[in-house]
Image (cartoon, rainbow, N blue to C red; front, side):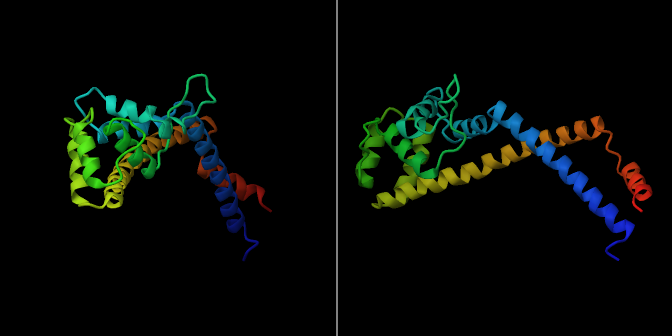
Length: 198
């Protein structure tokens, strides 16, 4: 049974399409890196999350914060923005930037709220959301940071969905072009394998 022609053809087809899928995935990954798709997707997600009337200045300052700029790719002539930011780093950078970029954000929730209200982004929509999350935490500054981290994580889940949809379109296009260029015809390949397998 295991030496049957059908079994051998099935193995050959699986092997062939595995190679094609690996080729398409590699091409997609190269395109993604070349176009900095992950970094641009993350930036779009942050711009959507931190909408403000200050002309995206809040997002620009978060990217410039040492916690975030320190994880940027500096190997390229033009410094690449990070393609991933942890929730912890985001929350700390956001709190520091919104409270005046002192490098010493308050350690209790009441002082933190006062600092944000006196900060440069106090009148933005982002500040309203942040204040709501801080108020929900009561006096617990750790819970306040956890609320900010959860808010960021939930937003990044949606951003991940955006990226997945984009890459699905790209990989489908690559697969279509690859299969057309290589003339991958399953029926013809099956017939050829059927004839060639003893």
